[in-house]
Image (tube, rainbow, N blue to C red; front, side, top):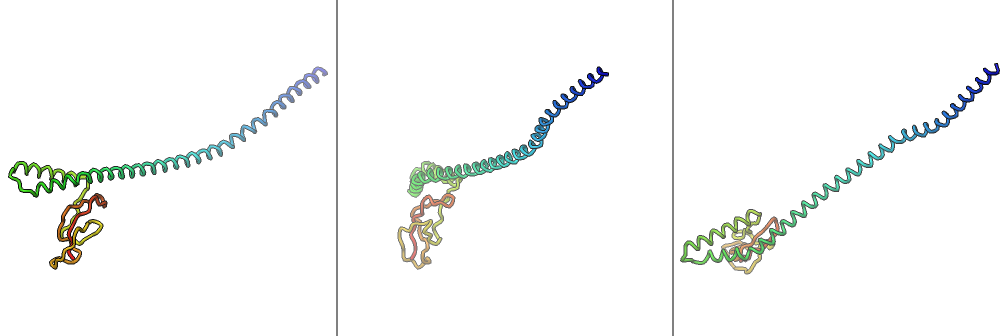
Length: 182
């Protein structure tokens, strides 16, 4: 019996050592489950942060796209205004040349064709001639060179255009030079 008791004791000791080893592992398992339980919260927080960051970046990009589109339009409009303003003197010279009597019909027709092509080109980009004759004087569009007493026209009415004015997208490139009735 002593042998049996000794064997049982040994088995009990082995079991108790295994149990203590298992109890040592138990805190590790509990810690791991706590980490696993906490991970979904962390993942959810990260997901929300990433979604917010993505939405912010998308909004910033959309604002950037709109801003660059506006800037591009502004630069284009400035370029058109500048080029057309530089061409206005040339257009005036063509108009003066067409008013002169010419004995050379072919030359006159050539100048006329070039003038028409130049006018149609600036009209394509949106430049318009300011209407003056038979309109009321508008200081935003017209520059009055002289005032004439004429009972045939109402007061502050444009009676003659001395030089054409041009407008591009609500911006006056050059005011019309006009005579106004008093």
